[in-house]
Image (cartoon, rainbow, N blue to C red; front, side, top):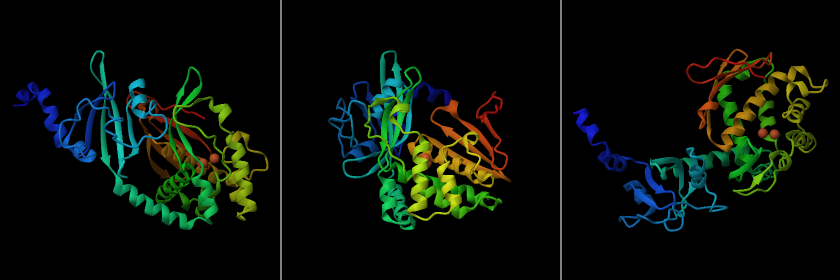
Length: 350
Ligand SMILES: [Fe+2]
Ligand SMILES: [Fe+2]
């Protein structure tokens, strides 16, 4: 029976595709649609088969394009031959899609992109309600306005030229980053991290809210190729500015201000005057800040474990070579990195 079915695998594609709840579209290298399942037709308001051969963006208008239409994620997937998952796109009628783009090679010289997407409008709405509730906890609307006006950029780094290509923009990135910091911190708190001596939950929440309010980002668009060292300000500059703002405009205490001021310093760079007793909080802050930055830009999922004063962070990336478990001892500062996967041995890294 099994053998019989295997003989007919080629014929199974359509029944499987039609049975899927997700929308599934196959386009060729010229962005011409070659297949759409029922869910995709329903989502895009097409009933007949006249979609075949139509241009995915120009004629089908699958989702709203911002920025350079010659440099979309689909272009990137074709160019780099690497899948991109979980990107959010809006349809023209205001629904939110979570989209996966996977490059496919049918046979030599014939390539395309397999697009799967799921309608996540209801999740987005829930997230917006939570955001509104969170906004009420912020000290005032100026802080919210400031955070919402800081964009974060998704990019692709070229190791040969040491330049980055901007591939996406999170318009309210500063705000999303703080919300993600608080979400991650709440996960760690649930695991018991704030029961440790030296970790003050309320102070850390204030640090998360204010730590980047002095950040100034360059204005870039999708497709720009830039040298990150010359375009982006050194993190230590905005840390200093944010600390002054938190101190003078929002009367935050010295511990909160010190952690904000040095949040982009490595431990070796800290001045003698930095209170040693704040090191566990600074280390915890930097774990959460770094993880949130990666989550906000997309492409990584994380889970945590806390054992006594040691935090373990398990990272799963789109690029499996970066998958691993990071261990940080909040009291001693000792750090370890263990790649995820077989036949690999733990390494220690700074
Ligand atoms: Fe920062
Ligand atoms: Fe940050």
